[in-house]
Amino acid sequence: MHNFEKLNVYQKSLDVVDYAYGLTLKFPKEEMFALSNQLRRAVTSIVLNIAEGSGRTKKEFAHFLNMARTSAYECSAIAEIARRRNYITEKEFEYFYTELEIIIKMLNKLKLSVNC
Image (tube, rainbow, N blue to C red; front, side, top):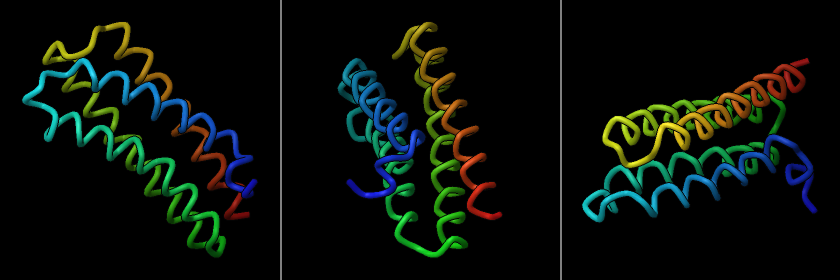
């Protein structure tokens, strides 16, 4: 097991990837290469940035954590668009949005610990 795999934020992010992929299965077919693909890339980017950054210096890791956080914000915006377009329910939106907020807070705390 790599060190990044032991991080709670990494494991939680993997769970959110699974959830997001499930959500996009409900999107209309015309969104397959647009909003659906964008959400999948953004949510996957959270996990990938945590993993990639963990093999770098502390300063670089902090930068990759910032990029992971930015991807989480992007997911929040995409979720709002999906909710407004009625691709996802209010309940699905609230759950996903809350999980992203938790990940963002976890990334912030991890970044603070890396910068110490």
